[in-house]
Image 1: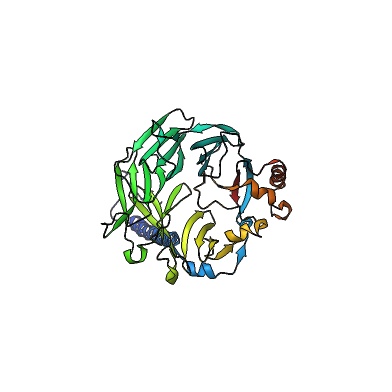
Image 2 (image 1 turned 45 degrees about the vertical axis):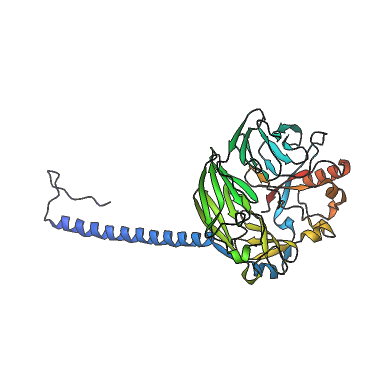
Length: 415
């Protein structure tokens, strides 16, 4: 910065040539600094607009259905770990809602009527919760969701009992949180944080007298009080017979939500605040009832750093990937093809759409291999870059029984 000329007493003289030069240079410097700051502000504003634009991308789903580019799931994911769950009389289960942490695996088992806890090697540790009407028990597994692990607590939602059950991970302590206002309808649930539960009603006309704006997504606090209703306004003519699931998914420690009656995917920031991130536009192929012929219906979403993974129905169950970098789509082998002759294309290597699986470890994704599927896999034809993973699968294939517990597969996004 320019030094102001001073006289011997330390004051700035009012009328001297040096002082006039100083003022001239000072003003010039100030103008230059303002211009620099203005440029930075303009650049910042342009960047912000670009970011906001990117956060609200419109995806043409008709274009998705027409794309002819096909890839395998191994182009998106690679296996990093396979974990066979220990099979004992008290642990026999099918694939269920699962949370994986750095040290443990928690899986809700309909067969056992509780949460089964395993370590990261698949060894059984114990059970959490059980069905019943006593303290710490839930009424029914129907509408029950294991939706979060948070700070060494497991949270379950008992849809039949309209209550939240909070368990410590050793199963020794619990807290029952009754919801003061029952949601009603077909219920899907998730958790924003330890102070906010999200309940989605999947049938907008469960209440026959409902008219006008319909609040389908509800938020409750830790005491079970209804704190906010997210206003949605579905078209009653188009959606009166539609019964499709609500979608929750987690990405970068944020919760995302899509209603079956709305094209927009919302990022939930706070109990009463959200922003639109994607618009999944079906255009003229919009589904209007449970009849899906020639109609597009999205029923599950997952997101990675590079991709949005879309499970959808269009004359059959299908899967596709949206590349967030270049805005293009590619198809993945359909579920029907996977069951028949394309099992060697590794379509099982994909987060299971109808089971809300979550890894609390950044960068991890979870899916399953059923033992019966592993037994018939041609492992030599699979694209498995890791020699160690391939050898582990070969070992499992040789010793596992078809009726054993499912194998947890930990995946990472392919670089």
